[in-house]
Image 1 (tube, rainbow, N blue to C red):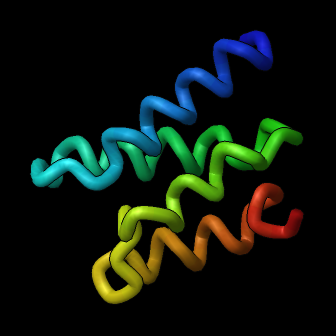
Image 2 (image 1 turned 180 degrees about the vertical axis):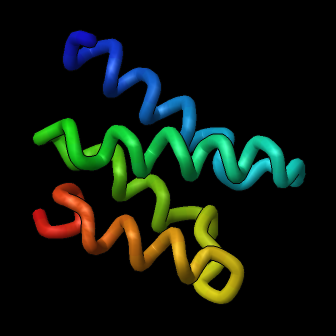
Length: 74
């Protein structure tokens, strides 16, 4: 997959992350964690932590996995 396509997928997953439907949120978490180790471009991930998309209590496991990933170390 090309860099442009991968960035587009990540942006869409981040955009849909905070939807009310838990199915969307779980799928978005899965997509983000899958791609966060394969890309060197971490600019888009900052969008997760703006506009209250991530709930520190509800998403604690996701945050931990993300921070331990390659993207979390940059």
